[in-house]
Length: 443
Image (cartoon, rainbow, N blue to C red; front, side):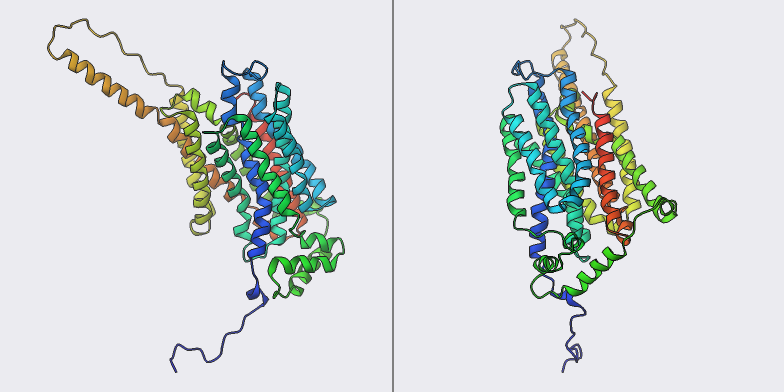
C-alpha cells in the first residue's frame, strides 16, 4: 500500500459538505438584476443631458443649466425616499417582495422618460427610477445575506456593487449607438426579468421563521442548499437568533462595541460621498465635453465604465490579501493626486502663441513653422488626455473605497440580524441624501 494512501476514508465533517450552490446563485442573480438596473438608471443622465442641452434639442424638452441640474440630482432625492420606504416594506412584506415592488416605479419611470413630450415627464420619470434604485439598494443586500451561508456570504455580498457597476457600463456602451428614448426602453428590461425570476425564488428563511412558518422555511432552505442538505442545524441557529434578539437601547449604543464601528463607517461614507464621485458619474459626459478631452466624450465615458468594472474586480481580489487599511490609504492618496491634477488642469489656461515674425525670406522658415505646428498639436493632444487619465484614476479608487466600506459592516454579523439591516438602510439613505445635496450645481 502506498504510504500516502489514507488508512480510513475521510468522512465529511458536517452537512455543509453536501451543499449545492447552483440554486443559491440563481436566486442571487435574480435579485441583483435590481442592482444592475440601479447602476443603469444612476448614470442614465450622462449620455442624455448633452442631447437635451444642445441647440438642436426638441424645444419642449430643451434644458437650461437649472433644468439639467435638477434632472441629474432628482434621482438621488428619489433614491433617498425609496430607501426610507424600503425600511418599512422589508418588515411589512419581506425582502423578496420589496425587491419585486421596486420594478413598479422603475417601469413607470422609464415609460415616462421614453415617451416624454414635456420636461415634467422627464423629471418625474427620473425621480421614480431613483425611488426604485433606493428600494433595491436597501433590500437586496439584506436578502442576499439572509439566504447565503457563511461559506459564500462574503463573495456574494460583493455582487450588488459589481452588478451595479456592470449596469452603468451597459448604459455607457448602449449610449454609443442607441438614441436616448430607446435607452429608456432598454432600462425596463432588467426590472421585468427580475420580477419574472423572483416569482420562482424562495423568500428568506429567516423571514419565514420570524412569521412562524417553520415548514415553509425548511422548504426554502432545502431549495437553496440542495436536497441532500440537513437543514435542522441551520434552522435551529436562525431560530435561536430570532428568539434571543433584543432591541438595541441607547445605553448599548454608548458602548465602544457599537459606537466605534458606526462612527468609523459614517465618517468613511461621508468622506467618500463628499469627494463628488456620484455627481461625476451622473454628469460624466458633460464634464468631458467641457474638459475638451481629445477623444469624444461618449467614448471617454465608456472607458471610465470599463475601468470601474475592472477596479471592482481588483478590489474584491486584493481586499483579503493586501488588507483593508493598506488599500484604503493607497486609494486615498491616488484620489488626492487625481483630484489635484484635475483642478490644476481645469484652472490652467495655456497662453496663446504670439504672432509669428513676418520674415518669409529666411530659408527654412516654412519647414520650421510646420515642425512647430506639429509639436504644438502633439503637445495639445497629450495634454487633452490628462482629464481622462485623472478621472480614470479618481473613479478607480472610490470603487476600492466602496468595497472596503462594506467590510466595515462585518462586525454587525456578530449581533442581531436586524441591526445590520437597519444599519444598511440608514447608510444608504445617508449616501443618497448627501449625493443629492452635492449635485445641484455640477453643471
